[in-house]
Image 1 (cartoon, rainbow, N blue to C red):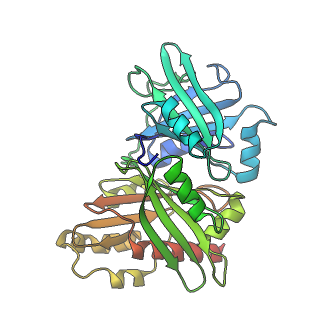
Image 2 (cartoon, helix red, strand yellow; image 1 turned 45 degrees about the vertical axis):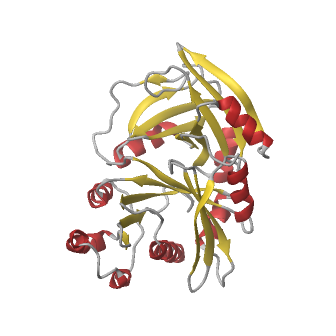
Image 3 (cartoon, rainbow, N blue to C red; image 1 turned 180 degrees about the vertical axis):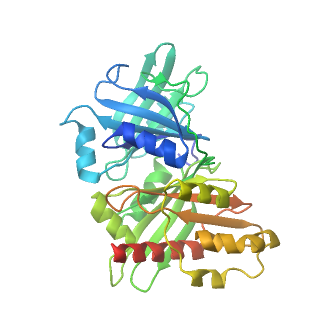
Length: 357
């Protein structure tokens, strides 16, 4: 399987302690619309779930209905976190067969699910930690929906997060696992190595690489801790989460300044970036961004430039009780990659945050 046939990310499912509260947090703070509900009343036997949407981002937030269910155990072990990264597939049977033939571990063979003239085909394989990947094939469906969910007609957010889509999903791996999972994504899912970066600070470091499909609609930065005199932020994630898992999801925006201002007003806390970071911002930065630099600095937005374009990023503090999952806001203006200076600045900012807690 040399090239990925997967079209993109169909949805991300989180296991959370209270799906209703989580959905309303994402609605009121991050600007997501709550578009559907599923539970025992609609035909879901073991969970209550809300589907939220913004731009092309779709999350399923699921909570257990039974104390001894796998969902309940997942939350006890990890706190709220990502369980399933689902891919849109044009042929689930073929993608599943290729994955298994190339070393993937099957969890659910290709299965059709149909409810009220809505039909999808899914299959699931294991991946890092307790996370899974589901292949989703949608057959003759108008719009986006899931079987056994009831659509809402008027549960839209009154705020605007202005988030367009998922840029990437960052995965924290245990030490010495980076090459194992690079080979998994190459062999099992047909992704390609598109970026490699090692970051070292005064006390710790990380090794990272990025796996992508050919259209860049799927991008997975894989990170593992490097040797250092202190625990890295990757080590701290692993200690808190209990195993490899999704560390953060990056949301694309066209206007990061406006988006960050809105999200701050609505209660999102972002990591503090030292003002010295901006002393080294490229002096040849395009005039438009030069004019915006004071507000960029005030908001703590990281900015990285090359002759072709500009990359701007900002990272939230963790959204859970434990210092695990957080979100990133990213704006790409004719700029690919991830910004070497930005990655190091993020690493140092998280280290400082950990020292104060």
